[in-house]
Image (cartoon, rainbow, N blue to C red; front, side, top):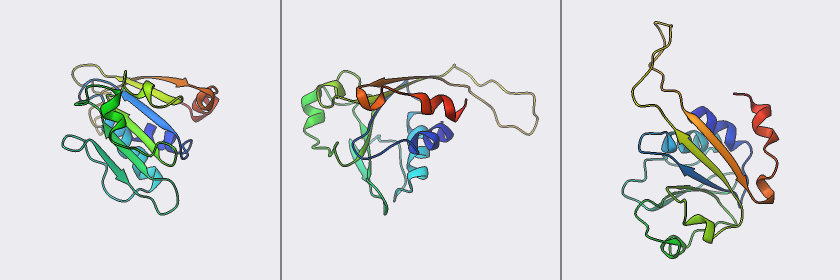
Length: 153
């Protein structure tokens, strides 16, 4: 998931919003960490357990804003966070049903994982839990996802 986040980072610019959906442990924060590392953000991207939104500044581009919308009841509470969607790259975990009321365009990334690890036939390899990632672009900005196919599997 971190590697996918790094691939995704190359496509992002100020004003982009990513909606991450998946159960606990699916890899949402790991994807965001990979994104942050590739963007060169300051600070560690952590699991947003105790913070609703954290801004990670960058020296050479728009900041990365990591949002945990899990405890928010509605779009108004998300709006109350006063996020700078226009000048930031915003990643919202658990924001389905909330985000749609605040922005017109976003990249929806849904992560599904199997329960239990599967090992591969390499004794030196770590345990692998393959993920199924579904990506949907909403709005004109994300109408062409050709870059995703060019990036490979």
